[in-house]
Image (cartoon, rainbow over all chains, first blue to last red; front, top):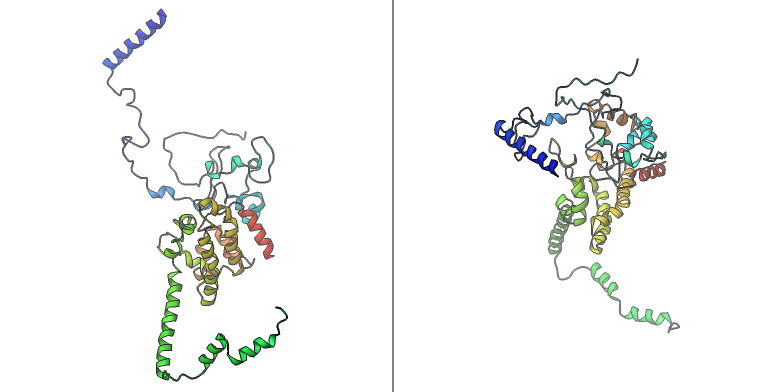
Length: 152
Length: 216
């Protein structure tokens, strides 16, 4: 009990000292929000419509081995909801060859218990949760990311 | 009762003709009271009014406003159509409900209009009250449209789109080979382009397979 009181007193003292000595915002001065110096309630400026221009044709290589492959075409007209998945109408194994589309990975036909299914698993139904159309998006933060080298 | 001889009734009719026979007689005897000119003018004016009225009614029931005046259309299929390429696009040319769902040429148009009396009947019955009611019927209703479009070689699509005028060189590299092969494979627009203006119902893939099977 006594030691608790001591701790609380020490913490209160430190807080008082730091409030008196350090200027407000000293800890946050280095942080810069990605949306710029826009106050939270203010409406941010809409990004240029050009960022939605997809790079059609030619599949880009993956940045790391486990990356879901990017989509080299527009997708906004394709219906993917609980009734229908239009991606599957080309990419399902039964249609891929005829439609000259990449075939969905075999892993996508396994349910969460590992049972093999005839049609794409419910856990994989919403394609755009992982696969997105390829677009020339600049990195938001400068970085030196490189995938792990696998071939030795 | 049933043994009453038939020739008694026949004898009565011979003395005094029935109403239909009298009307027939009046229609085919020359007018005594009206001049030929009056008859011609009244007939021609009446004809023009009737034909004009017929065409007016045909047009009045053949536009988007009329279609969405029923809640079945406004709340379901029309809501889905909004924002699709046939509703809004860069050039502002639109294809509204009748452009795709009512034939342009007269004979097929009248046939479709007569078929639409079934839609009126179900509107009055209130067969579709809610979106859930609509979803329940959706696969069957969509199937009707797919079947008729497949049967008439997507006639309404071809009022605007036709293979001869398509510049495949301007198409995406995915669309090009498919459009080039489509006429040879006996495919028509609706074979691939289902659900372009309205959402697809659950069970679409199986229905599509059945449709292709039936065509073979």
